[in-house]
Length: 253
Ligand code: PGA
Image 1 (tube, rainbow, N blue to C red):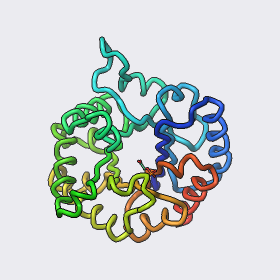
Image 2: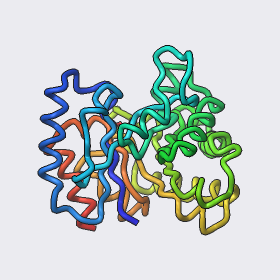
Image 3: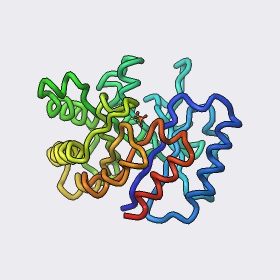
Image 4: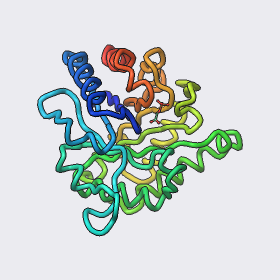
């Protein structure tokens, strides 16, 4: 399995020129890098400008709606993303849950719709600082996983495309990354939750990546020490040098 490095650009950059600069630089600098799958998740409006068919990069979206078409002003559907060449889509990011009121039920609909369209959903889960301090982390993660995958069948076809991103809310954009030991504990727990839903072989085939203040200096530790299968990078993915260092550091493992 290749190590995943997912770039979540969030609501950046603000111009198409900025996007092209970033992508061209990343494309040329990651060219010869092996054993890593780099997924770029730009804002929706830039997706159609980014065709990665001949490069090492993969395209992902930051969100998706659960219906494919109809009277849903402002929404972007799974089939539209697929048609533009997306292979991945982030679902249930904590910023969507907190700023836009996304519930576990909505996340579940999005996960199912993404799978049906042939997209790989990257399900983002994670606890707040308060939940962690009150010892509720396990319950929160279990509920998020179980409800997101409600009615996602045990078939290999449905499960083999899933990706889990463990992103503790307190670590996102805070500069306070989760320690590799803490991330390893969360990874083991999440894998146990998956094992309760799916066969052992299927549960083990689902990559679990870490997200939250990833930078070049800590990136490799989540693979070597925490034994996770990749990274979801926010802020640092907008800094070309830093992002390329992250990709290189995990490719050399
Ligand atoms: P960060 O964001 O790397 O800026 O902490 C990660 C994320 O929100 O996906």
